[in-house]
Image (cartoon, rainbow over all chains, first blue to last red; front, side, top):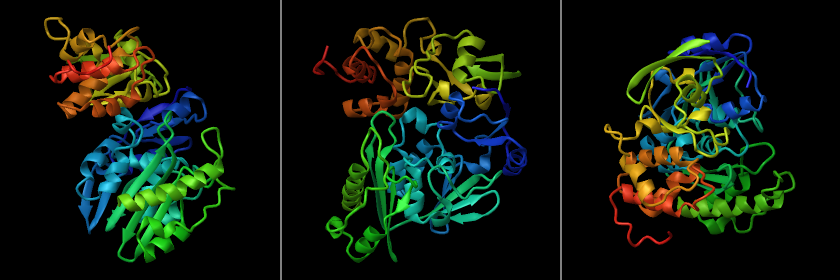
Length: 261
Length: 161
């Protein structure tokens, strides 16, 4: 990879200042960014590591929700979120492999918004709030398509605030080589309705499946979605599975997630 | 170039590193600790696994400067003080948990991290934990058996030799 200047601030304010410079790029756990830089698909002039900022680490209960620091590794979320939001903890504990989970972070995952990443589905299905160094963004406004988010230049994720649903589950069909989700579905049942978010399937990245949400809000059983049809014509088609195959997975995995919730 | 200092296998060490210097390269080329192997260099294979502050990480996917000041443990730090093999290493030898040996440093480091978290894992837990470590020789059976043996469990009835 091309060389760059490396800086590691210890506060959000210092990181914001460093990231305001031309050519600066945020680095969190680096489990996607380093492979990308090795392939020379990214060549930042300055990398600003966010892993040394204490304010961006950890999991805590606050105002009835679960707040997770942007630089918290998946393994920490898997362990610490378990008593409060087990479905979210299980999702974090199923990303990649143990060594990847010790480095990769929630902020890095949702800033990258890989169309097959697990975390975006949890953030969207939970109706979480993404807190950046500049503002608070609702999940419904945050994800804007494959590898695209509402984040502006110099903006980074300092915390994600999750409302805790009454019931929830995430089920993914692993792509066994990469351990990304070939397709994954997060179902979250709240007092005022059900939210269903799908990752790994759409060319537009993570999305909410509105028909399933309506059906499940009326009747929270896997059978409630039996009559729904998922259109696979605009879904990701690659050597691992066709759009029609992924469309079928969306329905099957949603049913499994409802049963597991 | 920046001088990077960290504690590796209990000793404070320093070497020059660029921004882009990976921890794997820092250990191998900067410090001459070539026990850490680089297999795929794309964070798939796990041959480069070392412990940073007690946690297993893929050293080919971490910048050396990002772990400056950390406690790092490599395969060279796994032997006992008298130079004899550590428990996990000895179990790999006893149960033929390797053939060519290229993946073994990462296998041993990941296995040690597993046993630190979960001292008596089931066979399923061992296989699941090692899913980020690829071995192209053994078919994994004897690796799993070695890890179970290193945890002090009876492996006399475990099949596959």
